[in-house]
Image (cartoon, rainbow, N blue to C red; front, side):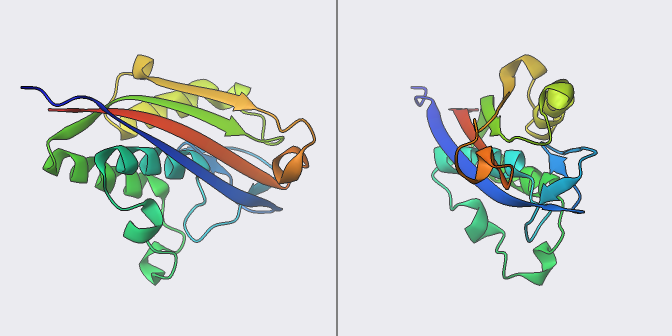
Length: 161
């Protein structure tokens, strides 16, 4: 008997500051501001990893890759994705779909959407049509709307291999 699909949700938020590198969904973006984080602060990959980990019933990203561990300082979040996919395989699971919403005033997501989508698909070993990425603004509300933060929400669907 096949196991039913599993679904997980991940959310990540980072403060934006001038002069910081800006990596969103594994794509370096030219921007006057970038996320502040212990790693590269990639909200998309952090949210996607947490969604996948949640669906698999595993610990969250912060538990697996602590911000208290110096080995994670400045680390590329793509490395977290590689480890998450490896752990899934060990459980006989795989990602079949990811849906991501990025909320930010800046950088604008539309010009980078296709690149982000392709990179996320590559990192989670998915065809591009199984990943969706949308950018939204904060309409002037809260830290996101005021341009002080970037937030991503991801939903992941997993199945047994």
